[in-house]
Every structure is written in structure tokens, then in C-alpha cells.
Image 1 (tube, rainbow, N blue to C red):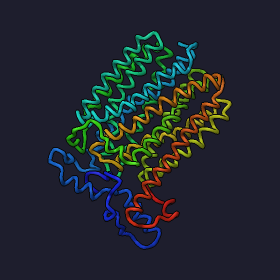
Image 2 (tube, rainbow, N blue to C red; image 1 turned 135 degrees about the vertical axis):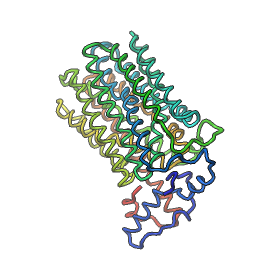
Image 3 (cartoon, rainbow, N blue to C red; image 1 turned 90 degrees about the vertical axis):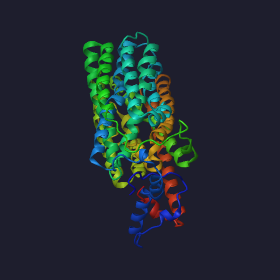
Image 4 (cartoon, rainbow, N blue to C red; image 1 turned 60 degrees about the horizontal axis):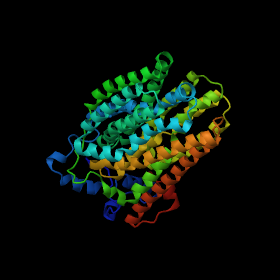
Length: 472
């Protein structure tokens, strides 16, 4: 493997770099072909590394022990970044049932929707800034914005004020933190790229877990205003310390343009972005509405909080397992299977639930299976694009994720109000499940495109058996 990257700079890698050295039997051929796909672009990476000046060469070798320091720092920061969105279900239930009971769910859904949407869609700018001005500087801007957003939200008395503070400002702040965070683990590892990404992303669920618990306790004892203030103080302290450990392995190359438009010329980018859009359009329905579902079944606010705790706890396990499985069976393969299983789990379990017990089962299974894409997507980008512009490319693809969150969550809120009449979730569940299924078709198309390109460049016939069992 190249000491710098296993990226695939373009769709026109020379066929000579793909020549097989494996055995002639089918099993051996599949193993070699799988290795070749995983190492696409290795020769070009070596050539590009030779041309780098001293300031651009890796500061440390790949897979070194030091790489775990920034990876753990990212995991801890992810607790705060995603804790804001993953725990919003507690605020949502509180706002819908206690503080603003006469406000439409569609209106209140703007708050949580904007947190996630802006965190992702603003990455097209914050990702480019992270490559240009540095990871730490970008992260510290995020720390200041997030803290200010929580504090200002705690003094808000109107829904529109919460939309601007807890929604818009917090969303933009988390985007500044998220852009460098998502780019660090993949560039420090080659052999354990999936595991490192899984560990880092597991922080998103761990954060949702304790953010949810802390928020619920403070809401019960002190109300939502003090909950927001305390979360702001905790976020400032935690992220300020972890930002200092944001080290790059591959320094950013000098750039004339802020954005990496060359990625948009590749079909790989558009198929990947389509998967990202569709997945984020349907994924968040359970996070936002599982608590309200429990309330419809006679559950208490604590029951709603407990369901979110279970969902976040199982998601932490699922994100970590996804990275391990992806290293063993292939990134896109793992992504595709997880999406299919998500649809199979979500639709029948949620639609047929009539008590709290099936909801707990749903949260456990959905949490283990569904969040695999959050662990695997950054790794797919790292293996398909230039690592020196990793934050920029991820930011561009996350623009589509933000659009998916916005259209998906607002549509779900409207469907819940208009068609489900706030008494059931049948139509909301169908909407969510269909978008996740569409993400599966996009992932299948991406897998097909990558495999066919490799075999075409080799001049080798692609058999059905090779296609089905290909590790990619």
C-alpha cells in the first residue's frame, strides 16, 4: 500500500496499474481483484507523493500509534457535535407536549431540521475552509458559535427565536466543528481505516446517549432554559480541549480555488451524493418521532427519553461494528447490506407497534443497523478521492445530505400533521422507508459503477459470480 493514501484520483486510472498477479482459480482471482479495487490509484499516489515538497509530505507514517490521539479527540468532539441533533428528540417532545402544544409539528421540526441540515450543507464552505485555514482554527470557530447559540437560545421565548438560535446558529456552529472532524481519522490509517472511522463516529451516538440523559434530567428539574445554558457550558469546555489535538497527517496542498470542483466531474461523486441525499431524507424520522410515538401509546416523557437512550446506545455499537465489518467485507458492500436491513427493520416494526415493547426492539435493531452509513461514507470518500482535499469533497457531498435533511424532515412533519393527524405514523413511516430504499438503489449503482470500471480498465470480462462476491 502507498504510505500516503489509497485514494483513487480519477476515473481514468491506467489499466497497467490494475494487472492481476493472482492465481488462475476463481477464488484466487476474486481475492486479487478485490485487492486491486481496494488499492486503485496506488501507483498514481506514489507518483504524486514523489512530487510533493517537504511541507506537503506526511508528518507521520500511516497506521502509527499517534494517529489514535486525533481519532479519539474526534470521537469526543462528535459527542458534542451530534449530541445537539441526536438529543433534540427530547426537546421536540418537550416543545410539542408542554411548552408549545398548539404549535404545528411542522413548525417545531424546523429547529431540529436546521441543526442537522446546516451542519451538513454548510460543509461545502466549512470543509473548504478547513483545508485552507487549518483544522484547529475551523474547529475553534465552531466552538464559539455553538456556545453562543445555546446561551442565546436559553433566553428565547418565541419559536422563531429558537429556530434562529437553537436551529440556524447551532447548525452553522456544528458545521465548523464537523468539517475537520470527519476528515481526520481516514487520513491517519490504511489497514484500519474503517475501524478508526467507526470509533470516531461512535462518539455521535455516545454523545446522543448522555446528551439525552442530561437534557431530560435538567428539563425535569430546571426547565428547558437551564438545559440549554448547561449544554452550552459543557460544549465550550469539551470542544476547546479536544480541538487542540486536531492534527493532520497529510498537509493540505496549496490551492487557488476554495472549492474542489474536479470531484463533480466524476460519476462516482454523483452516485455517492445521491445515496447521501436519500439516506438523510429518511433516516431521521425515528430520532424525531419515536418519543412522540411512545406518548401516543400512553408512555411518559421519561419513556420517550428512554427510547432515545436505547437508540443512541445501540447506534454507538452499530457505528463501531460497521467500521470493523467494512474492513473485512468491503465498504460499499457493508453500506448496501445495512441499508437493505434498515428498511426491513423500520417499516414492519414501527408500523405494527401498539405498545412500548416493540418500540424498544425497534430502537435496538434500528440503532445497530441503520447508522452504518455515517461510519462508512467518509471512508468511501477517502478511498475514492484525493486525501489532500478530503474535507472539501466530503463537504460538497454533505451539501446533498443537508438538502435531504431539510426536505425529508419538513415533509415528515407535514405528513404527520396533515395525513397522520398526529394520531399515528403510518404515512410518515412509508415516506421514511421509501427514501432509505432509494438510497439502497443508489449504493447498488455506485457498487456496479466502481466494479465495472475496474474490469473495463483491465480488459477482463466481468462474470455474474465475480460481481456478486466482489469485495469493494
